[in-house]
Amino acid sequence: MKFAKQLETEAEDIPSEWRPYLIQYKALKKLISKIAAEIERRGLSAALLRECLKQGTDYKTGFRIKYYFTGEPPNVRPCIQFDYPRNESGLPDLLKKLTAHHHDENDTQDIGNNVNARPKLQYQKTENDTDFFTLSSKDLNTPRRKSETTDMMKQLVDLTLNKSNNGHSPPDSDEEEEEEDHDDHHHDDHALTQLQEGEEGEQDNTTHHVSEMKHLVIELEREDEFFYALTTELEQAVELQKSTTHKFEEDVRELEYRMVAVSSPQHESDMYAWRSIFSLYMDAQIFRGKAERDRTMRSVEQSRSQLAWFSQQLSQQKLLNKFKTKASRDAFRQFQALNTELLTLKHYQLLNQTAVTKILKKHDKRSGLTASKSFPTFLRTSKLGDIRLADILCASVLTRLASVIPQPDDYLCPVCLAVAWRPIRLVCGHVFCVRCLIKGQKKHVKDCPLCRHPGAVEQASALNLDIPMQNLLKTYFPKEIKQKKKDNEREQAIEDVQAMTGRKYTEEQLMRMNDSQKCIIM
Image 1 (cartoon, rainbow, N blue to C red):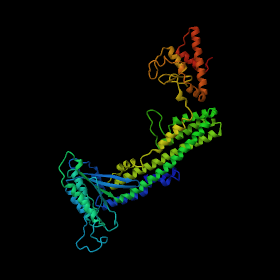
Image 2 (cartoon, rainbow, N blue to C red):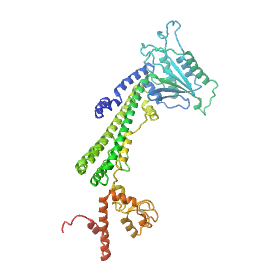
Image 3 (cartoon, rainbow, N blue to C red):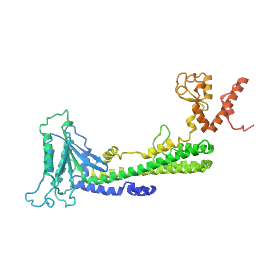
Image 4 (cartoon, one colour):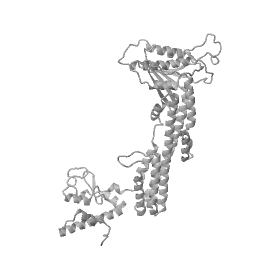
């Protein structure tokens, strides 16, 4: 399926109010055809420009052709820059022909009606050893015929290309045209004076070759229409994303306030239901991986698949049935809507990014230029830079909502892997439950088991009890603490029996005693 048709099909999944802000791929394709036609009419060709731009800088001769962008969106100016040594005589002579007014001797008509008038480079300005010219796009609809400017533009490119690759001649274009223009004599004379002054008095110095270079920049006016349309659409897309982001963040803050209320310890049943839901949500890794080795953002297809898996697991585990209040059910519907909206925004961004990439590649193929490389670089330095809003909003959901309800995994003792009830914080900062710490001291463990801080376990006492953390555990993990107390009492009872009877139980026996299942025989 062609991308234009694919874009139309996938746009149906985007909200109707967003569709006008998708990149208009078909309209841009039509503008590319105009660019290709203009380049041919200029006496160039896609093959010729592609060959030129492939050549690296020849540091022996200094000749080089570069394609780049300037200006501020949406007024972007695509330019071709010719770099050449000051002492190069061929190029200024050629420029003199390109910029000089030329009429036939029998010319008695106005220049606008003179069929023998030929177009030329329009001088703009000179800054920092750089002469700026424009190829006028006026009178492009005049009949095409043999044009001296066409031949001289070929010579300009050929001169640079041949110097840079030691005589290899690129292919020529067969397209020819005549154009008409009316320029100021003063500007043309000033341009030639700048070129000639740059040659006079210049010494041959190969050590500082860069300082001997001059630059000629030609702005491609006809390309302006294409890049103006493209950057205008990108600006509109950015504005849509900004407004959507603002609304999304407000919805996240509103949901955060609602969840704080519905999942408070006063609603213990709903609190545990929400905790299970968010634990499952984190395991689903809908938008981003949570493993240390995989923190990458998921693709649209992966996110859609994982979101479906998350919904399926909720139904299988019947977690939504555990909600006791209507407020919790309403909050969950809002949570699901935010995830769907985030997935839609991610899809919208993908469609626009793909459209821009493909249209630039098509532009390069038809024109021979390198916009697919230089234009994204130009955008990154502008206000239309690559901002990953979907990634930012995903992080907002994870940090704001997932942190509302404390998860037991964040408060586990690293030894027994249960909630660290009666948490003892060592001098190194690591936290252990009091039971595991006492067992470690009985076994004469001195250093921290995690970071090997000297004497951390040996020096621990009741003064190391983390009271704020203990209060938090008591508030948010009443069931886990109850189970932890039960396990501690059972373990203490076993130790007392061993102390009174002198009998030592094996690890296997202790595991059987800790098994909550009844004996299948007795």
